[in-house]
Image (cartoon, rainbow, N blue to C red; front, side):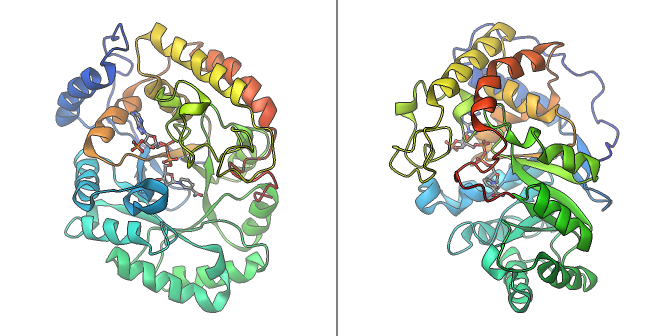
Length: 371
Ligand SMILES: NC(=O)c1ccc[n+]([C@@H]2O[C@H](COP(=O)([O-])OP(=O)(O)OC[C@H]3O[C@@H](n4cnc5c(N)ncnc54)[C@H](OP(=O)(O)O)[C@@H]3O)[C@@H](O)[C@H]2O)c1
C-alpha cells in the first residue's frame, strides 16, 4: 500500500475529447506535449514505508537492452528517453541485471543518469541464480558499477528461486541495506505463499507483477495480499505489451516474441505453456476496449493505463516507452480520470479473459512459477 502525496494538478479529467481515432495519437501528443512543458502531469506516491516518493508512471528500461527481445535500439534514443522522462517529472526507472544477457539496460541507464542521478529513483533486480547468499554482494556491486551509483533505491528479487531458502537470500539483502548499498527491498512475480514467507524475514516494500485489462489474475489473491500487508504494487506490461494500443487487428498480426504469452495458443512458435490460450476472448475484449475508447474520444492506450492506475494499491505503472515520442503518447493517461461507470464496463468486457486465465498470474508459463 502507498500513501499519496498531494496531487500536483487540481482539476483532472478536463481535456477536450478528440472525436475520431484517426491520427489521434499524434494530435494528442502534440497537444499534451505543450501542456507538459507548463505543468508535469505526473503524480507521486510513497514507496511502502521508505519515504521515497516515486512517480506513478515509471520508465521500464527493458527495451534499452535491444537484442533478441526488443530488436535494434539506438543508445542515444534510450538516453534521450530517460532525459525526456526526467524533464516531464518521471523520477522512477526500472531495470534489471537480467536485461539482457549482458545487463546492457543497466549500463545505458547508468550512462543516461550521469549528472542527473539526484533526480532519479533507481529500481533494479537481482536474477534468481544470484540469490545464493555468497553471490548476492557480487551481483549488487556489479549493478552499482553499471548504474554508476553508490546506492540502489529499490533492489528487487526478479523471480523467486525455490531452490534457495528465501530467508537466506533476504538475510544477504538486509546486510546490503544495512551497509547502505541498497535503500529498500522489493520482490517481483511473488505469489501469496512466496510473499508470506518473505514478509516473515524482511520488510518487503513492493511486489512487481503483470497487470492490465487483459491480464487480471493478480486480482484473485495476490493483490488483496499486497493490500493487506502494505506492499506496493508495481505493475508491468500495463499495455499488455502493446496489445491494448490497438496496433494488432488479429492474433496473426502479433509477432512471435509477444505471442508466447498464455493469451495465445501453444501452437505459436515461441510458446511454451502447454495451454490452448484464449485468442478469441482476447481479441473480442480488445475490440470492446477500442469501442469504449472511441466512444470516449480517447486513445485505447490512455484508457488502458488509466484503468490500471485507478485500481487499489497501485504504486506505479511501468510503461515500456523506448523513445521520447512514445513517452509523450502515454503521459496523458496520468492526468486522465476514467468517467464514472467506465471501469466497470471495461472489467465486464474483459471478464471472459480473466475467467479463462484463472489465478495463475505467470504470463508465460502454464506451470505457475508465482506460488
Ligand atoms: N519484473 C518482470 O518480470 C518484468 C516483466 C516484464 C516487464 N517488466 C518491466 O516492465 C516494463 C514494461 O513492460 P512492457 O514493455 O511489457 O510494457 P507495456 O507498456 O505493456 O508494453 C510496451 C509495448 O507497448 C508498445 N507501446 C507503448 N506505448 C505505445 C503507444 N502509445 N502506442 C503503440 N504502442 C505502444 C511498445 O512498442 P514498441 O516496441 O514499438 O516500443 C512496447 O512494445 C519493462 O520495460 C520492464 O522494465 C518487468
